[in-house]
Length: 338
Ligand SMILES: Nc1ncnc2c1ncn2[C@@H]1O[C@H](COP(=O)(O)OP(=O)(O)OP(=O)(O)O)[C@@H](O)[C@H]1O
Image (cartoon, rainbow, N blue to C red; front, top):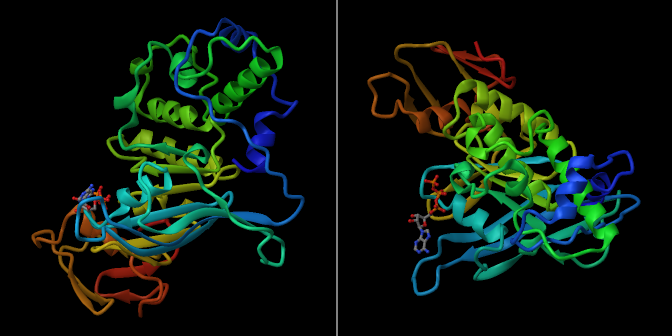
């Protein structure tokens, strides 16, 4: 992560608990490689994760899955990617996470001064600088305890005290930032509630202090309470972290979103400001936006979760106005739905 996150991880205000020191000292957990904590200091200005005209064609295939994708996401902000199934959202996350290489284009971090001018050349956004939480991350938990799950892959043999102290601080910071400090580190990850499993999945990534945190469908499979819990947590995390999420849950994530992009079929990305269409529980109504007729009738073949997501959040640049009532649909820019 950038200066702030790294600084927070090593902040003198955060003192590793005796339990964490013991855990790190005893070298109980460990075999994923530990990413180095970088401290990129910029006295002023800001940095951005940038995707620059990226195209991707899987090896041995004839067709691009992504076509000249560009997006910028400023540090400590929340970006949302949405769009139809199969449009290429996960493919883009995989490129950002370094799990595959773009065929063309670059993915980098660029620092800017306060006037918005680039400061120095861009740095490659390498896999080591990105954390990714896959869909249903709890399915990939391997360890017997929360502590081992978070510290899985840490070096066992390093006896350097300062190094172990740093690891303990990073551990403490990750646990605090996701609100896992109330539970025992000896707890079995599988015994946690759905919301706490997601907290754990986030801690596993945050302990590596990534510059960019990627989330693939962070609310999928959770009940309403856990979903609200995760949304609140993400709201807190974005104060210190840069987050890009892929999700169909536009309504719930809407309050967090700073920038949003729609991935269209064929792997073309378009930035779209989210706005909310308020729906009054109409039995049937039609609205034309984006030149399209949308049928909200429950019997309509379009009445499904995905259509609702797209319909609830239509283009802000469309012809609908805030407060406008058309048929039984109201248009609003808030998230307090009727
Ligand atoms: N290695 C590959 N070779 C060929 N086609 C692929 C490969 N990987 C993905 N695809 C295809 O690329 C398209 C985009 O897939 P992707 O998983 O990125 O979509 P998505 O927008 O994330 O969908 P969903 O919302 O359902 O997760 C799909 O049609 C998929 O079958």
